[in-house]
Length: 417
Ligand SMILES: C[S@@+](CC[C@H](N)C(=O)[O-])C[C@H]1O[C@@H](n2cnc3c(N)ncnc32)[C@H](O)[C@@H]1O
Image 1 (cartoon, rainbow, N blue to C red):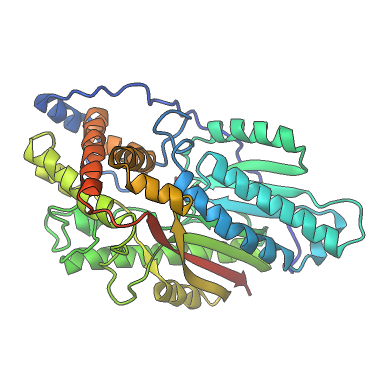
Image 2: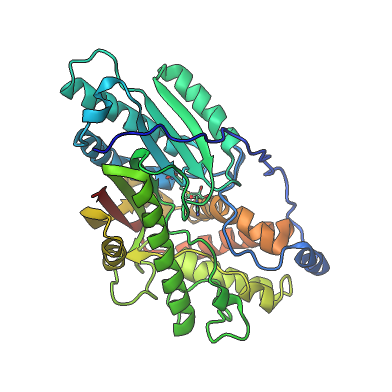
């Protein structure tokens, strides 16, 4: 492994991000909707981060589904860290690990702990040195991330663990450089890289054939120009991510990323597996709820059309092609992994309780999209949207239109050459 540089200075928790779950009010007037539209920014292009704080709709309280990934990834991380060529850090130098798209809440802290313990275990097995290597752990996310809440959670967690772990926040987009050259041993990114850097310009340009009229996403789209715009943006984003990490990760170090993935190689428009969690609630119920807001005059058509969800699910072939094009990584693993909600019993129970399922999907989705939607249609219309979404999801479950509670994800382990 190449010589280890200490990472450059980074900002610690900096962002004031009040928890504004309090009360958006459940009533909405038609005119109120229009006023909000005027106040809302024209077209948000980049995501505004997960919902901060610890309130009802916060990511902290609504990331249980994502936490299922920990079970899959723990043994893999332990093994990969165990196999790192550790010569450099046996002398007490820090092992540098970054979590890109950490968000807030228990999940990122669990990954930090897994990585930390794996380093200690690796050291125990391979070295007679008594001094254990410290771990420098970087929590990276957009500047809008609620780092303050995360660092309060970290304090409680670290106090109880008494760890030799040095934490820092790194605010910024992971599609650009965030670290000095060759300063990281391990880069992980969990359920974050499906978010694109922005909504492609063409899909919100009325003059373009890619204008995504009547839709807020591209799942099952017939608009090939809109689909192509998403494909191109997502491909370039992934390439930018890998090129940035190629500079930052030392030779022999690795990137592990786990994203919402696509099983249909040849049809990118089939973004979700139609038997999975998202097929019903997202592609049908999510968009039909937007349509209700339009039909009832709460928002106008153009505002709906100019809202697009900047998410793209890559296939294994697409990731392979981009990774190979960088010439910087050896592909160690690249495969689809199914992520299921809770235990089979819990999943069954959820499907058997439509109201509970509706509430779960509302909170889960709101934690992801609230800030982004509020920027576009204002707080009242967003709250109205989610009330309806909850009811519509519950109805879909009752009618048997929600088939399963899983997502197909894509796991990639790339070793820096
Ligand atoms: C669904 S959360 C996943 C959080 C966490 N890794 C987990 O497993 O629970 C996705 C995170 O990616 C972050 N994210 C999305 N795009 C980003 C970008 N371009 N740069 C940095 N972070 C980004 C979001 O702000 C969000 O916190």
